[in-house]
Image (tube, rainbow, N blue to C red; front, side):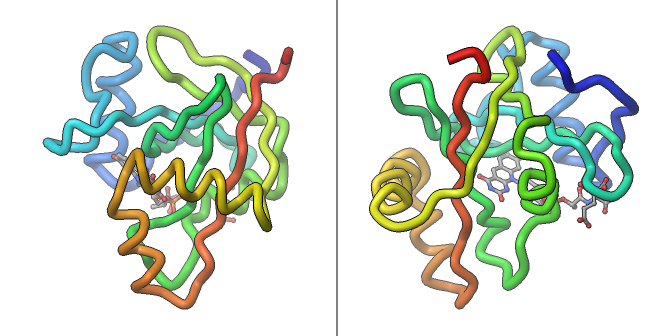
Length: 149
Ligand code: F42
């Protein structure tokens, strides 16, 4: 995994606790969003200002070995800051979906490709549709593909 460096846990306690429990259990615990039963993955990025390692739980949206990363932030008017990390360095990204993380590269989707992956995202986690209806911000979607594929 090329993403080495100083890990800075999230300032949000429930987020950093979910990352810690997911990683320490090899993905067998804390692998759903609270009590929804809907699966999550852990995405590692590099802080675009600090250079620190950041880890962010996101809903698991997988198809054919690729993953959509949905910068919904609950429908907030502003992007989550991990969005800017991906924009700044789309090759310093890893996903953990189970026991071990793996390197990916990401690209932001648009047009028909985004529509296809947006439908998959809403199928995996229906509240995404409500988040988008609650904000004028177009919720960005990134496609993550394994680096060695
Ligand atoms: N968020 C989503 O957007 N989509 C999801 O599908 C999703 C699912 C999910 C499931 C479980 C769970 O526990 C949380 C979930 N979340 C989901 C919430 C997600 O994990 C994040 O908490 C949320 O998206 C907000 O991301 P954020 O990156 O805006 O988090 C803030 C609070 C944060 O970490 N801020 C740090 C801080 O110190 O204030 C800085 C983080 C950072 O990356 N800093 C950069 C750096 O250089 O280090 C600079 C960034 C910049 O450009 O300012």
